[in-house]
Length: 329
Image 1 (tube, rainbow, N blue to C red):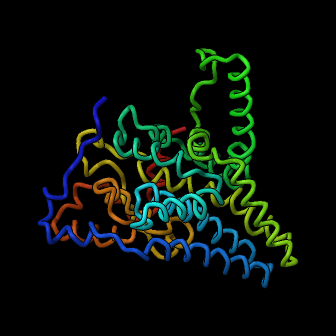
Image 2: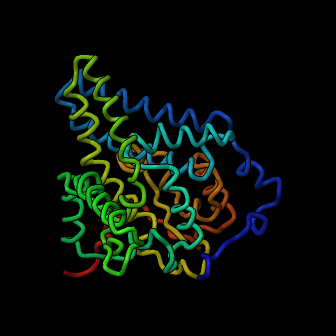
Image 3: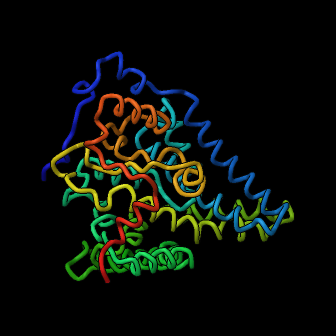
């Protein structure tokens, strides 16, 4: 079971060059969480104040729900706060649980992904292995996301199936046998099983949000401006993010610089697809303990060292989707 190729910072940087990337801020992570919820609140207020802008609010909120998942990812690396208890509290209760995830379940899964990135043992391999697909196949996937089918499968069908399986195992008092359900082969299905196990906390937090909206006299806004984005835009941009990070990247088994893709994102893509520097994924895999907000500086540093040619760099998310859908029908 070989681990993914690694490169130590000392192989590239002098200690004084690496020191700024190694340090951790006490306030930056909490401020990012506050920023994410602030943008969500402003987009909700915009949708309530000007209802014909609800579609715009849905896109903004759905992207920031992805932002919460990204900040959960930051917490999985212990990067939201130097205080580990605060890091885990913010990452779980304010980032993971509201969107149906669990930091405790996500962290070991995700660190395993880093250890075996793009190897056979990588638990995320299912997200990138099917690509490239045909344009029609990609179009169907995105339509299912926007239509709410992916959300319904993640939040309703899969939890019910997991509950049914656990009850069956408890009734027979045995471990899963060869006849037990196999690991799902659909990308979002597998992702949901790994990160979507905090069902009760998710329901409680969302019941609390509904209560807040109801007390404010706008109960409908919970459905139109929180649940609708989560059921439509959030799954779609999550899929696009997953495709952009690893799909169709060759040479990852031999070269640490090829473990992932970095996508150059303009302000529009950062606002509606890729918040919180998630597009700098090649840099993140090179040095996974560097804070997300320092990845642009790390990218610039690697550029100055003439190393970007070794990495997979895409000019835009549209170019990534074209690459990932180049297969003929």
